[in-house]
Image 1 (cartoon, rainbow, N blue to C red):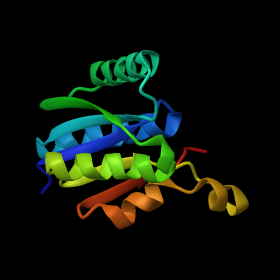
Image 2 (image 1 turned 135 degrees about the horizontal axis):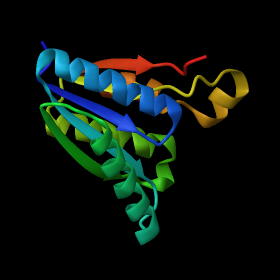
Image 3 (image 1 turned 90 degrees about the vertical axis):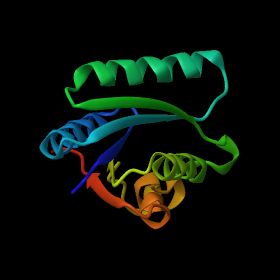
Image 4 (image 1 turned 30 degrees about the horizontal axis):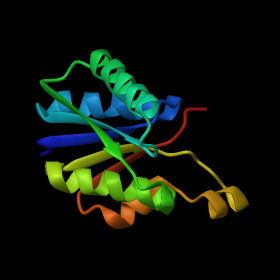
Length: 135
């Protein structure tokens, strides 16, 4: 069913759970796995930290085919910039499934900060699996 699975990570525990889910699904379908991380700064330190996170994540999974991509978001657009960068990556790579963790924000915090996962649901045409924080 799925040939290409993309997972977005940010270093959080929920993102780690999303990575594990994506790995399980990729192995079940013998699908390719692409791990993406989005940075909002153009500084060398941001890029180095993002690349290190991708490398650590890639080493932690066992899948048939693994690819990583460091995405750059336009910080002027806030969470919309992150969502747009991930959405573009899904389309460019041709992912059948996008796996993302949710922050599980509620109330005013969600209204003010917004939700990248929620924005992705309206941007991405492929299937999306949202992974909630473990309690």
